[in-house]
Length: 386
Image (cartoon, rainbow, N blue to C red; front, side, top):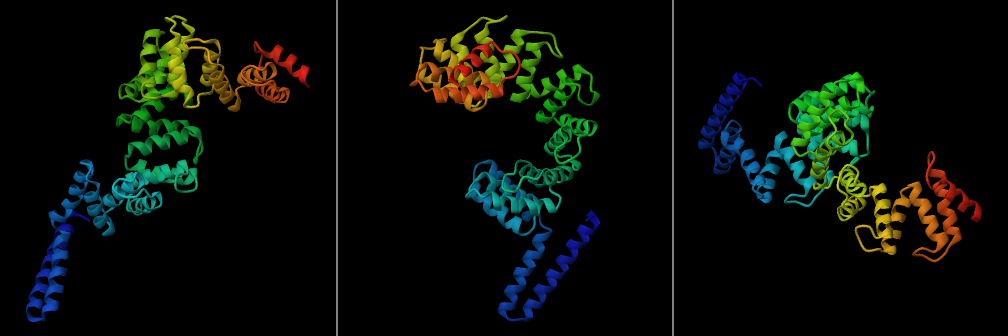
């Protein structure tokens, strides 16, 4: 609606409201009250007072007064305001001031998205992408991301670029992926900056400028993006796309690790454990390995088991060694399966059990690739029990 149409519409409402009040003077009391209520509602349509309810709700939400925000946004959402519908959706999704209910959250986002609210469209895209509250559907996710991305929503642009990059819900298209990631990255979206940098670093879609890789990943890392910090650490660690610098590698790995990034914790632990081009510190290595292992990084679970077995950076503890080696074995790591088999065959921390040993040796044989230091011993042990 144009400004002139809006102004004329407000004038018409005000004239009509005045007529209602005039008619009410000649009618009975009940009609007078009804006319007054209708007039007040119609006048509110063009009043900044009603428009301010959204701002009051937002301020209440930001101050943690969820009850007041919920009340105001519910009233506005029910009257059809898409911004309020979106925020009401967020409150139900987060459980802020109301019992968490993803079904209701999705319902309100659908209403807002249908009216073109890009945040709600992005919200729905994420639900379909993750299969959270709805059946996972990459095609449906992509359709909502496209709607939001075309309106300039940076998060949707990043997600759309990522889906195009990997061919999820849409045909793989590196050029289109780069375009959408670039749009989001230039808006300052750290996730998009990291993804775009990774495209350049790996020369995806014929992108060969490694300088662009460093530029975008640095931007994301400087914003505190943990994955970008880990990537930047890896670049300095390997000298890929930048000059080799172990101190910078450790710096960026640590930045990511303290934020809980499991892969960075593993890499930092490995640097401290190996002591190659860096001072060995087994206590620090064990600390970072344990943090990563608790997040399920399989290599770190095995490494931690070895440290407990050998008493490196900690007192020897066969029980802990067995626990972590078994966790890694159950995730399919061949060397852990081989090691667990030897524990059962030799009775290390457990009773001798040839059947269990044979079970884990079979698993290890099925999973190991290439030549390994333990391959000969694995086959010999397997043949002894077979």
